[in-house]
Length: 309
Image 1 (cartoon, rainbow, N blue to C red):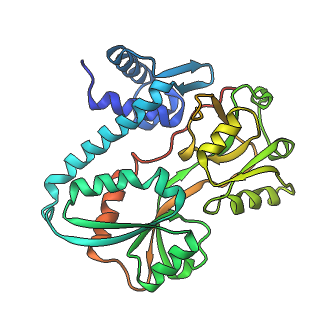
Image 2: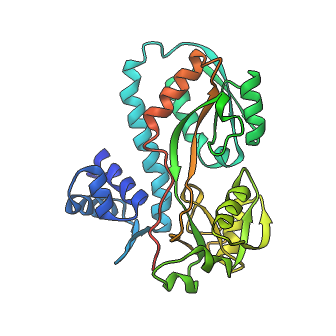
């Protein structure tokens, strides 16, 4: 096998951008170099990683599985580079880290794994709350640091934040849906469809805000706190939804394909970052955790899949 870290880096860039040209630009290299790297990976692994189309590429089922491992490989490489510089690697301590529901399920685990590999003697107490409760506990001193959705914060003037990832929101719909044949899809188009509403964190509040700003209201037929339920009902044609690329996967639990498409109206991204008490500042262990987050934030973003229309 002649695969190197360069091949993994090129693969992840293509998966995250959905286009070889965008990946090449982001990596400051040529398109042929990226194309050749992907071909080499597919040849050595023995499976097809991407489906190609004139609009770009989408991950195959095998490609989606490989992406998770490729991201772990790159994260481990970053850890290896950091390790010799961590002269206090064995320092002991304790940190109470809060997170919201979505962050707990789709974002925080890689951060915890990386932190534990670099600073195994610092104990992290992970707790999950909704964001208003996280804000309250940050200000009361019960929580040292939080990883959560950043906007809107009710007590923003009292809480310091640092952005880690912006994840684009797009329309999820069945893979054979008629809207995929359109050159552009607007919120007005989506209003005419049965809508599946995610009811965790601020998902519903945010959704209603940008529909209201456009003078529209979604036709909500089902509310659920389960992301897998949303994938299932969208994939089989029960309705559509707007959610971020970070939580998107192109298959339901039953193996039914779903698609994601861009929306022509302005839709806010899902912003995830760190939050802490502005007045009391950060403990030593919280500062160390933030440093680890900063070093790996370029690896931890959501997956973008090119829309097939």
